[in-house]
Length: 223
Image (cartoon, rainbow, N blue to C red; front, side):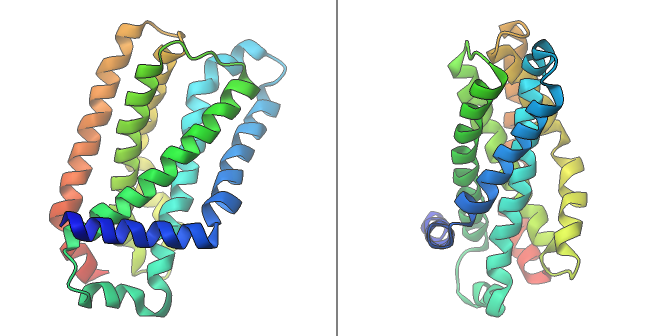
C-alpha cells in the first residue's frame, strides 16, 4: 500500500511540476483572495488583524477546492481512471497517494499565504508550534476529505460545480477549528484555547483518512 501511495503521489507531483498549474493558477488565486480581503477591511486595521486567521483559512479552503479538482481532472483525460482500475495498484494506496500530493501542495500554499498574511494584515505569530500543529492537522483533513468527495463527484458531468456543494459543508468544522487555533497562535485568544481545537482537527483528519482507506476501492469502482 505504501509503495503504491508513493508511486501515485510521485506521479501527481510530477504532473504538477511540469504543468505548473499550482504555481501559475492556484497560488495566485489564494493570494488574490487575501488581497481582496485586505482592500475590503483596510479602513480599520484592528478589524483586519483580528480577522486574519479566518481570512487565511478561507483562502486556503478555496484554493484546496481548485487543487482537488485539478487532481481528478488529470484522471478524467484519456480514460486514465480506467487505467487506475486496471493497474493493480492498491486502492488504499491510490487514495493515500492522491491525498498526500494534495496535502503537500496545500502546505506549500499555506506557507506562501502565511507570508502574505504577515505582510498585508500586520499579523504577528507568537506561537509557531501551534501554527505548525494546526496546519498539519487541518491540511491532512482537507486533503483526505477533498479526495473522498472528489472521487464521489468524479464520474458526474457537473463535477466542477457539485464538488464545492459537497465539500464545503463537510469541511466547515476544519475552517472553524483551524481559525480558533490560529487566533491563539496570533495571541488574539488565550493559548489554552488552541489545543482542544487542534485535537478536533486531528480527529477529523483521522476519520476521513480512515474512511478513505477503507472505502476508496468502492468509490473508484462506482466513479
